[in-house]
Image 1 (cartoon, rainbow, N blue to C red):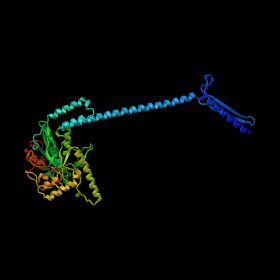
Image 2 (image 1 turned 180 degrees about the horizontal axis):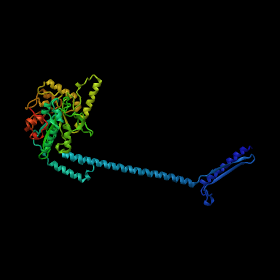
Image 3 (image 1 turned 180 degrees about the vertical axis):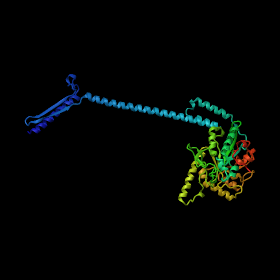
Image 4 (image 1 turned 90 degrees about the vertical axis):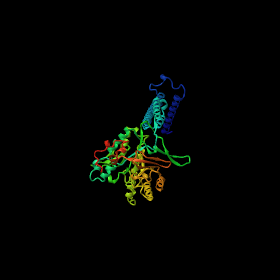
Length: 498
């Protein structure tokens, strides 16, 4: 037989022996022997040496090392240890995450609670004690917080001491126009309307002094909607009725409004604000350009001045009321060029510019409403609605609804241009009134020198307003004596009025 074939058989036999030995060691009980019967290396070694003495071929050795059971066990244990460490590490991570989330939840709850307490305190300062109580009782921890319960009790006590205002037809309404920031520019020779500014405008300093005096005398801002409210009667028709106003003893409600919040072109470079904008803090404010062309933002007109005053004196407002901003449309709104007639709408670029102005103005208007202010129509063309024909009233009303209302939103407040009411004191009737009512207006304001003048019927409310301007403070200051001392607050830089 060929020697190579014999060699193959020998090798196969030796491999068979190795497999048998391996089987016996690992699978036959008691076959592993004791420590004295094993090699010092702890391994079973089977070696086969093949040599071809005849041919002088070098010897070939085949060694099979049988795995050590202890080494295998150690490897298994090591794997288990590593797995256990990984499990414990994951448990620790999950526990840390749980603690972090709980701490964040507690912090968020504390923040919400603190926010609720702050909100409730503001509501209480503005005499809305029911809302303040509701705010605190909505805190999740209310039932376990004795301090919150004590605060609620104090609010209930303060609420019970409020006094109902005795007559809603005896509430005053003051108004101003855009405030003069720089009197040297407004009253200078060469300004667009130095005499008009002196007669019909109020300075920033004067207005701030008015607020201080009103506050010291116990006046509190209310909305016309606080005086009379719309409701649905049992017969399904919408009507108007007086609404109860509850204030502390000695407090007096009044309404504040501002006309022509448009920042007309003729006022440019005359020391007035440029426009209303949204400030860096997200609140509405004014943009102003000084004589050197520097642009700044701040207390340059009624809105930011009142807002900041209320931050210091929240009790100057009844349930968040601030004031009414009356807006026309013939030169845009709020300082933005939103009038359609100001553009060639057949030109895509011009149309895009109009749309950009409308969008910017609407964002500001939304911020103003969210801030607690109300808008009123001051007509579109600022023409006399009393002397205008019915067709002119229709044209004007439709144009305001089409161009200005989409920016400011719907309103049921109408402030007559020049204070010129469409009807006399005997009440509303006629086609002009019917058309304005059809357009959605329920509350109407004229100008009247009386301390207060109000009519409230099922269908409308009329309210007289007193102009707090140069003309009134100089010529008939006694009309304003209920509110402030005109002589004390009159700006000394005003020219003499003829």
